Image (tube, rainbow over all chains, first blue to last red; front, side):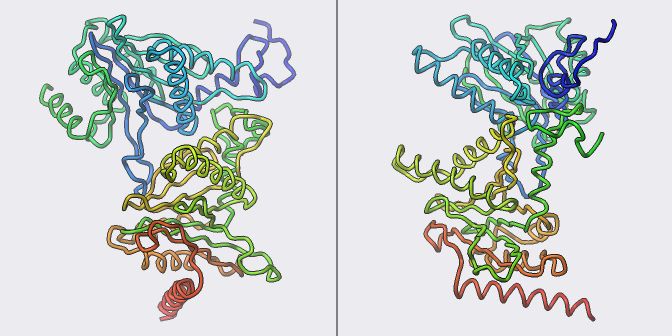
Length: 247
Length: 252
């Protein structure tokens, strides 16, 4: 392809390069991987499990305050990967959007509608000169009571959104994707325990390490328990032990 | 990977090819070249202390404190550009007062920390503005529990047992880790914080500094109090004595 000449700004603001690329968005994707964390999401037959590594950066930090799992509504939760400040800002915005929806329409904002809304907001940042795309990617988990279906969605800095049976985001995204594709090919109607097992095993596989209960965080939402919540450390320990014994 | 931006550092709305926001990183450097600010969660209170470097002896003492009242029960210490810190304090005060009016009760510190972080993060989003060149420590003693939050120029914040930012943050953090925070009373915490500030102060580079100290504890009934008078002198003397002892140890 012949390279046209650009004025040199295509790398600095979100305008097209002569090849049709948006460099600033590509750089925003790189920002997600800076922390080195990878997040995994797996959808089961009636549940969704989100999991990631938990790194407490400093001994002096109150460990409970370090978490990338957030409730956007009672029912819908999310797992954030990327620049922490951008993550928190986006979570606050999502919480606001969900509350606004409920106030206006009288019912809870469904997971997929919220994901689409956040993606639309992310797109605005990619088309304004004075703004930058947020350096974070969001995994949404919810159980839709109307459709009687678990939902797993992912949005990213470019404004792309899609539903997934399983997905990975972050530094080891490629390895996670390969691992999950192999698993989903064989079977995709997971129970809660099986979904948790896949998330934990995928994380162990891509990071090549076994985790202690305090080094991993897992969020779940199921048909029977449709409120998104983070598993406590004893619960995580129970699952890790169960998985280890299985091997 | 370059550590300076060259070309990708002119706007905060611009990522570098590695995905870094250099303007935010430079804002951190502004904090790192300023006097150290320290926060300690003691058993029954929170202490804030700042090495307030004064550039001229002609200034009135305590004219530019680096410790701020945010509400009756919340205190803020800042390191970095003082005008930026005052802007953050102004926003925080508005938020806290607003909350008090809407909800009829004092603002929980966790909520204020979240709002301050959101504010500081907002200034890292647009090319028309620049990030705040200051890091802040927010402290309160709520429901019998001491709480300390540290917010960086990027908007990242965590809850801490102890925290230090500024020039000598590494030394200060090491000193804080040595303290047994769960057993330390707030009254003694004031002296220990003063000692940390004095020991981290670089006599050669910055001759003259003022020690800004504040306390929010069970003793003050949860009110944020700026330490002055006898308590300040006591803490300051304790710190100076500890420093001399340390120096004389070196001589031996």
